[in-house]
Length: 204
Image 1 (cartoon, rainbow, N blue to C red):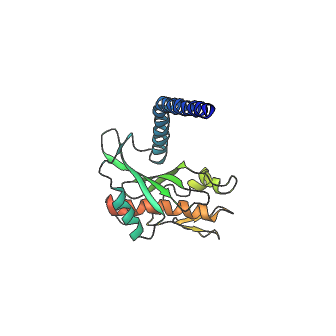
Image 2: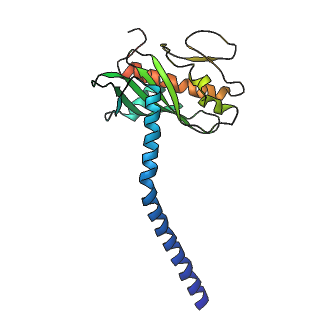
Image 3: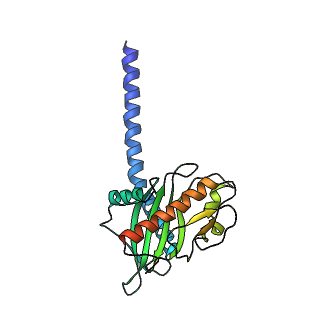
């Protein structure tokens, strides 16, 4: 009986000490991790909207309203996670960066930043997170694919498997149609939000 009590106390002590150590490690690492994540995000912002000298997160952004807007427009598998206003050195708005999380990728969620100039032109896209199949879906993170969206002013994009031409056409990644569709829809979701909430549109 005494051995049982002794072993129980030992295991309890180990559990408590382990928990405390994990807490200490978390406290030590959470700020560097957060700083690294923020740096990655800022680099992505500068990549997709190079005309901006700084970015200001829109504090009045309502994720619930954005989700409802996307659902109304047929993009129920996407959600907008953040919107930042890009300003130049004079403080003038030059465009926006819209972060979109897609839940329809092949191997889990993917998140992208979409830079949109104030006239509605997509200036670029950058992956914030992606874990698709190497050699297939991961090609979505390569310049050859991402640059297809760059400097295009369209209402919506769609992908093609036949090489169909047009500013709104994106060549699908061979063997990774699901990933292609997820990225294309995510960019379109950003356009929907921009056109409806940020005063932009292709006809302006």
